[in-house]
Length: 122
Image (cartoon, rainbow, N blue to C red; front, side):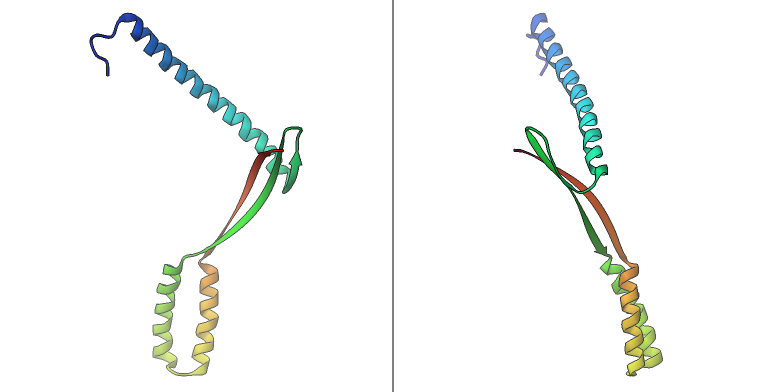
């Protein structure tokens, strides 16, 4: 986009605009750090609703469990093969398998906890 017909003045304007963008990005980064620091204060205070004169906020916590079903299926398949070979058709084999399956799912379940912050105008 730097065509030879750009004059010295327009080049200065472009440089000035680019510098302004750079300064704005730096200011935004500093403001974002300050915002994150203030939000952390509320998150550390715990769940609840908070109100200012112009804005209100709520801190909430949620939990998510994830099961790695591929790992569960592969491990269960291997275990089923072993049960079929050792105890094909027996009730005890089915009970042991059900116990193992519950433990397998528990061992392959990952829990994540997140804390959120929501701000809105009053």
